[in-house]
Length: 332
Image 1 (tube, helix red, strand yellow):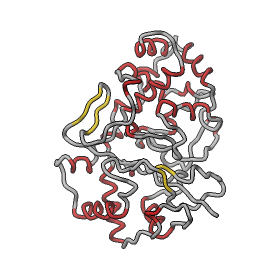
Image 2 (cartoon, one colour; image 1 turned 90 degrees about the vertical axis):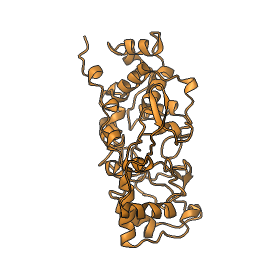
Image 3 (cartoon, helix red, strand yellow; image 1 turned 180 degrees about the vertical axis):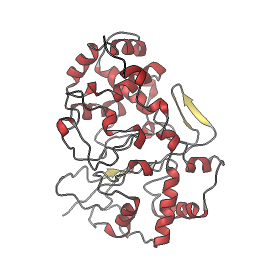
Image 4 (cartoon, helix red, strand yellow; image 1 turned 30 degrees about the vertical axis):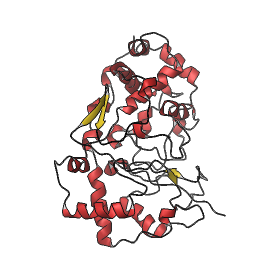
């Protein structure tokens, strides 16, 4: 019996005029309640500052060449654009495409296959994976303790000078929680500030009919796992968990390539898969038992709608970008 798997990661975000705030991050009021428990990691500006520095600092990798941002570029919705698969130390190539990072507060599990069940634990995987950062946590902590900038950053964030794993991971989480995308054209339509064009409106209706069961509004994901009929790439031999998470859709213009292995470079190729490329199997999602039927005009309409999910304000928000004031200071 053949088991095929994987679902598209093309991500989305929404917004309204009213927001719910929690110290260092805010989100539209009509978003659901967040999944991340901030009672166990109280947000603060200093913790976010520390997490931002750690996210961009290659000190986390064995040879100090790879940072989190190496594969999660802020200019690509924190995805790894133009690369099918992620790159690690010593020019090694991984087995999956780095997913975009945003609206993580609403996720219950992480990685393409949901292998990590808490955001605080997620960073352990890339830091220690031999084809990514290839470092041990103990050596990361030693490097941070011997740095001229991190003892002070940890002290300001946690009110003591002890640098330990839990603090490292919680600071990274809080920075990532601030990566909230909520100002696309779609968002502005929800706020009553703009209107869809005729084509975008048609595309929205087609999306709700054909895509919404997995990529559900308002976050454009049901955060479940499903087999979407992609033939397995025999060169990668990546079986995942027989299903890949339905992640949200946002800034599609910036996050190509698509799918867990980056096999599709364009949205047209993604639609081609769902129209005529689905490989049937016993584990195929029930929503995909029949191919999606779309005319060429309807395909264009859906793509027009999907492009309304691009959020340039999020992409170019300086608060999320490289902290020049911290990491470009020469150490004494």
